[in-house]
Length: 554
Image (cartoon, rainbow, N blue to C red):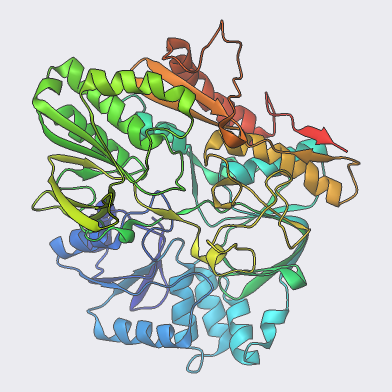
């Protein structure tokens, strides 16, 4: 967390975690305002967690969320009223502090000189020049672009950095900009192993600035909107960037608030999730301290990031309980909104052997709709054979939740989205179906592949090649075949390595005599634990396309 003093009464900061509240209180802050909507990123604690920590220290806490690009004069007025009414000094925060600073700037635009607003914000590291221009020109300044690049990439996750690196590996010196406000990049496939006590959390995190490929301009901002007819991307703070080619890969949104009561109990009362960086260690704490009882593992409706992850957490937990001698005193239930254990049938027999060995009760067609943490009751909704909808309550001692997942708000409300809110792309070229110079990949695209890092590893070279094809630097297009991979960790030391393309067609990377992905394998575990992390950090993110060369057609 970075905390800056904007005025005598107001501090602004990037996203804090609960442990930062001691430092905030020690600095004399007496109230906090959260300007960040819950669920924007996988490393983000919910407002309720921050508020509880603040209130325990005697700090007032208020929630005034602002979606990037949707800052309004009404919100600025509400913000100013809060600042004036709360005990001071006040700390306002969002992902980076930019939205909070912009609220202050817009609220004071008619009272303070423009130069003072710009200089005060700049002293804290924020550029409000475009916001001031918008206020002075009553919106006309929105037509002015602050930068222009040949290729603009939205999102510095696995997909975005890989595309940038692959582009520069193919054409050094290409003018590429990458837009992302995050300070930290996460190896999210490792969070399953954090939740099993195999990896330390820090093993899955790197400073973002160290990963941006050399020669790529990093624009540290959140995207607020798209104007594809003008080849412009709008950024928070009323800035905009022009492009010749646009690559969109912002990831997806974890909708924690889609389950009633969940946000209020995450990280306590035995409720956890490996889908959040700061909660995966709590999963391991719960698992190793478990002495028997009711353990529930949930899976929401598709699509979700890494469809095997909900059951990976379950298998590794069961293996630990078996080793600790408490599995016999445990009732483990897999409550899935889906109709099958895994979408590719060839891998199901091996998984069922573990389901039976661990004594897991499979419950399909069950969607988690509510959690009462203090009472330790989870409510699931299902439809019976006659079409009637029912709710059933299930007690728990441990509840591992996978939240419903949707495209980011900025995508769902944009011209790039399909009817369901995802980036509408051709599943082979990954080019947008309407806008020829826009590509989408990774979790936010609507291509019908598994949403995994392995899929992004194969997609990135295809997109990089096709961007250069659009620019006239290649003579043939590349095609993506839908490859995805899901290393299903069925016990500590063994993995069922699922690899498949569109339609569930098996696509093994190794000969069957070496590694049969349909059977649990120690070699696959070695691959997951020892080889895939360096392949990710030193290969995929560096533009080294090992086993990922795109297929060319035409």
